[in-house]
Image (tube, rainbow, N blue to C red; front, side, top):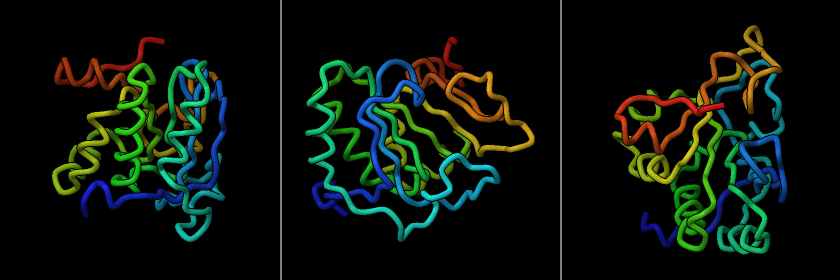
Length: 175
């Protein structure tokens, strides 16, 4: 599919200003659809791929651009990595309009799993290239830790993707 054909993404909703979904003030987009089904998931209503609603990517970008106070945009869910083409196009349009906004993705996949997925899914690869921060790994109820910055369980990592790309190895966010 040509990039210009991806006009919508399926979402559960948005928070226009969040301080709990990454560093700074963020516009958070909750993708609809997830197959991880983590026990104790914070957003179980986002699992059903038929739930939520289709939202025009350009309208989301317009909403983001209305707020000059934003530090970044968070793709959460659900799991945005089940809609890589649409979220890639959204990230690309955001970066074209406001390159000062960082992109953070929450995913149940590990970074290593995403690298494997990227071998067959060009949009996963392109989306990761535009990602500034990645919080990876399934939520594990037995490893729940409320003291962690922006994460729910200790197996999840907060990865600085820009530093990771430069170093060629995972670099965690400096808390």
